[in-house]
Image (cartoon, helix red, strand yellow):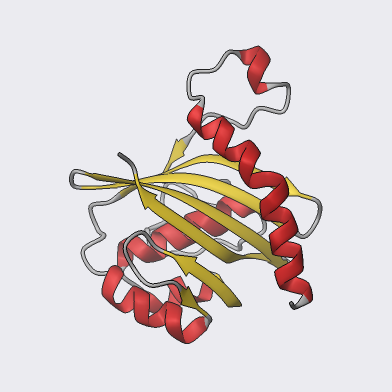
Amino acid sequence: MSKNSQRRALLLAAIVPALLVAGCSAGTTQAMQGAASPPAPTEMESPGMSPDMSPTDQAPATDPRTAIQNYFNALKSGNVDQIVDSFSDDAVVAWNGEPTAEGTQAIRRLYQEQAQGQEGATHTIDEARTAGQENAVVRATSKQDDETHRELFVLTRDGEEWKISELMTNQQS
C-alpha cells in the first residue's frame, strides 16, 4: 500500500464517522455541534469567488472550499479539463451507480459522460474541515431536477493548492 493510500485510509477512518454522524443529525443543538461548528452552508459561493466571476472562472484553490467551488463551477460549465484538473493524479471517484474511476484517464472518461446537462444544478457546501496541514474533508449536497446527491470529498494539498483525492457520492433517499 502506498504512503498516500495509507494516509487516506487513516484520514477516512478518523474523519468519516464523525462527518456521517454530523450529516445524519441535521438540526442538532449548538451543544452537540461544539465550538468549532462550520459556517452555515453556502450555495455557489466561496472565499475566492466574487459576485462578478462567471461559473467558468477559477479562483486559486488555496483552501478546501475554494477547491470544491472550482470543481462545481467546472462541472456546471461542462469543462472536462477543469474538472479533471480538480483531482490529484491518483484520485478515486466512487460516483453513485457508476463503476469506480481510479486515476486521471478513468476520471476523464467518467466526466465526459457525467458533465453534460449540469448547467441547472445547484451545489451547496455543507461542511469543510481540515485535518492538519495536508488533508481536508468537505461534505456537499447537489441538486439536479428532482434528484439530490450527497458528496464527500477528501482533499490533499498539492503545493499551495488543494486537490480532490477521493470523491464519494450517493443519491439521497
